Amino acid sequence: MTEEEFLEAYDPARFPHPSVAVDLVLATVAAGRVMVLLQRRSAHPFQHAWALPGSFVGIEESLDAAAARVLAEKAGLGAGAEGVWLEQLYTFGAPGRDPRTRVIAVAYFALLPAAVLDRAVAGRDDLALAGLDLPVGAAAARALDGAGQALPLAFDHGEILAQALLRLRGKLDYAPVAFSLLPARFTLRELQDVHEAILGQALNKPAFRRRMIDQGWIEGTGLREAAGAFRPAELYTFRMGKGE
Amino acid sequence: MTEEEFLEAYDPARFPHPSVAVDLVLATVAAGRVMVLLQRRSAHPFQHAWALPGSFVGIEESLDAAAARVLAEKAGLGAGAEGVWLEQLYTFGAPGRDPRTRVIAVAYFALLPAAVLDRAVAGRDDLALAGLDLPVGAAAARALDGAGQALPLAFDHGEILAQALLRLRGKLDYAPVAFSLLPARFTLRELQDVHEAILGQALNKPAFRRRMIDQGWIEGTGLREAAGAFRPAELYTFRMGKGE
DNA sequence: GTAATAGTGTCTTTAAGACACTATGTA
DNA sequence: TACATAGTGTCTTAAAGACACTATTAC
Image (cartoon, rainbow over all chains, first blue to last red; front, side, top):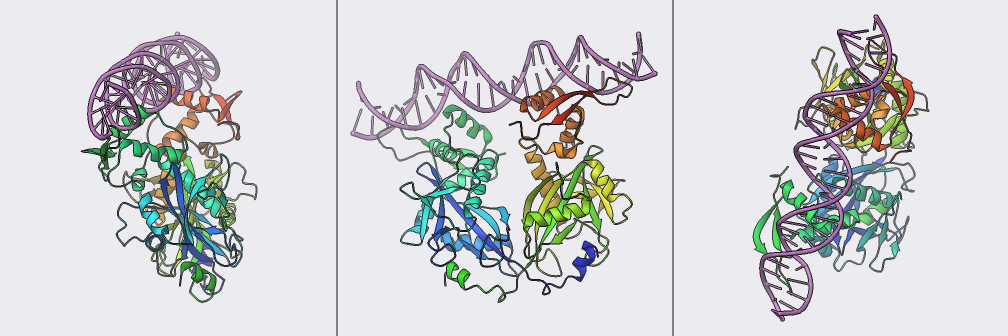
């Protein structure tokens, strides 16, 4: 029997099917670090460990729609979700990754301004923003609480977080991902801070400014930030799709 | 009921589950083009159209193992499969992508030397190697037969092929993917031909040679190719994991 | 020698890094 | 005025593109 014949004769009810879920890395940048939203598990398995928000995929629901649904629920966004970066990351399907039953998880990552995620966790005991730490060469990332302590992570979510950070780093230079992490108006210094937090290294200021301006992704507004005790910086905006 | 509680109370048999399959893009480079192995469908739906080889994922089988199994079956490789590049690409899960039932397809791509795929299709009426063509900005790639005619593609496999080509292009410069498409010993001209076929554009010869040699991925053997009517080129080998 | 391709030397161009400098707001 | 940060001019460095040149093999 060939693959082809097998496929034709295949009866969906005849073999057990895996469950399919989406797991979301809701990320932002704050305090010089990439931060992710985690939810504390109240029950076994991995009781009291921290997990990515997720949901099973409805039988008539697309993967993207399931991810957008979880995003809306967890981040408290309406259907609009304009300016939010949402992208499929990788699919994790090791048989033992969930001890209860076979669950194949399609991981997504979403990028949001820090203010949005702060609002989402405010007053919620079971939700937290954790700082990401990925030692070079490590397969899994660590999630750090405010005191720098590593939080226990459920399932294979440390690996999902590692993949998300690596993807984010890889896209930073050729996709306009950083702007989803900033308010609508931002200074070049804030933009550079975001890049440095994601890459985990300092960048050269004149070169960064040249690159950003030549790229065509941003546009000066002529407005200035609210000044402190020094010269206020110009505010820029992201030019939606006009550059590159 | 929160997501969390839902997950805990979830009874795998209570809701219908999607089927999960892997689909493979088996790719090589020949005649200056990226070529992929396609299989002609004998039955509805998409009867007589061409499809990527694939298989359902066993309930206790990892995604990678399912992909490796299809690779072994279709490309006629033993379990070894040394030097073959196999990588998960993207997961396609639109509800209507298979008209029979909900099938979520985890797409993989594999890179093999042209000789291996030639052997796989030899004497098989239902298998063919088709040239990939991706017009700029198009969402789906076309598959061309030997005469340059576009073959009808089944399901959303044109989009899978487009994603595979884009991923391949993106990785070419920072991952040693090209070597999986060449025999163990190759000339710099052959390596450049592979790069040019994947990128779809000509490259500068001295710059290409400098880059390849500085990169540390290749090593001269001192041997020469069998000469034609001209100076024979030096043969190089891929230094497994030593460079970079 | 010729033909044909392998392989290189070197100039130009482009972009990034380094670093010091000037500019401009508040107090 | 001092202070602190914004923003720039310019030199150096690294790498890619252009292009012509030399090298080596079969015949």
